[in-house]
Image 1 (cartoon, rainbow, N blue to C red):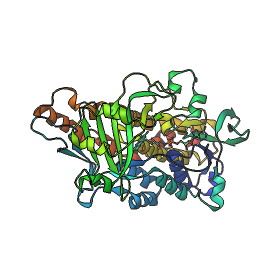
Image 2: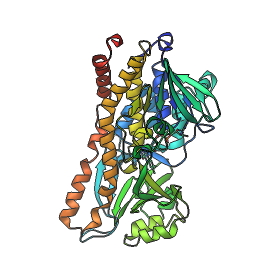
Image 3: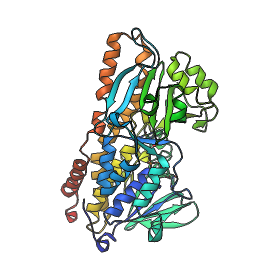
Image 4: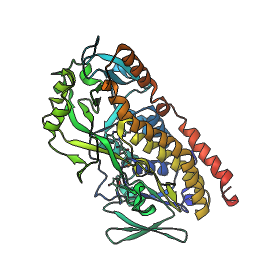
Length: 441
Ligand SMILES: Cc1cc2nc3c(=O)[nH]c(=O)nc-3n(C[C@H](O)[C@H](O)[C@H](O)COP(=O)(O)OP(=O)(O)OC[C@H]3O[C@@H](n4cnc5c(N)ncnc54)[C@H](O)[C@@H]3O)c2cc1C
């Protein structure tokens, strides 16, 4: 990790737009590297809505590379599978009976050694990151500004001027957009009429619920009620994983072909629609979802089209702003953490000198060259994931079909879990040195 004295680093100032998981992970990484930054968040505080976030071994590596203590702090708070099953990512069980195999039967355990499934509540993770970025109290509060919704960007000599909805302006030498799937920066960077400017419907969505283990134990045996599981079923799949010592996050993903007709992405009170979806499923999944009286339905969206580049001038998109993906590989936040680490490393190299436009461009271009092929492969696997998890029952399930399906599932995400992220960062730094204008070296 490159580290700078605060005097040297003052030349480069980084504006982080958006204080979600990605923005705050970048803040931690920049703080560790003594790079000046400020987070601009549209909301009035750092808050995450929604349930738990499940991460794999690659994300734990990213946490450790961002900040030595962050990985251990995450491990301390993460909910995991029961002690004898901790390297299991998910058990796979049948969502409906087939010839020779009963409904709910375990047909495979997908491994993600050494950590298996690790999960925390979204808000708990966000608070951990805010704390480690030094943004919670004292002087660090000056590095965070709330109610700051970015609405405009303008390149000016030596930097970028940002304008906010409240009529104020601020300047920085680099702007890193971590403003999520509805990214304003993305729309400012590329033609707002282009299909790449807005996310599209994934043709699938999820009925979501948080269920206490105690409640689940009324329909499942105790170990099963506490272990992460996926049930492939007719035209969908059920996923469940522990998010705390007491609670399971449960989601029933189903296809919803066609365009999404509503303005909102979340529809409340979807019991009767869910019952229709569950018609051909077996008793195990039906009994789990019977515990959810009136679930909301969340319509999955992602960027179907990408612009030629994710950076322009002194501005770069990272996290969901660059590569929002459906969660079928459980990897959106993980990729955001990887982005934050590599971005901090290239900015750390750029911070050794005056942040001229050419040096910033060299850093952002080196970042994109190593990160984009990786996250685009993860996006493709995530999109395909909905098909992979839900296509088992599309044709009659023979013994051979089940065997082939399980074999494919076992290693599908190895490339996500096992990755040399530190190698990516040093590769980006090397390419900055090679390709940059001579004055950068
Ligand atoms: C149903 C579901 C389940 C998921 N499960 C997983 C999982 O198990 N594992 C996993 O790794 N990933 C998962 N993901 C993906 C993960 O949630 C995202 O990839 C991650 O939250 C992206 O973080 P982000 O910081 O880039 O964006 P966000 O979390 O969206 O944060 C963006 C921030 O920017 C702020 N903002 C927006 N506009 C502006 C503006 N104009 N000015 C200033 N601030 C602004 C917002 O208020 C927000 O705080 C899941 C996603 C969904 C939808």
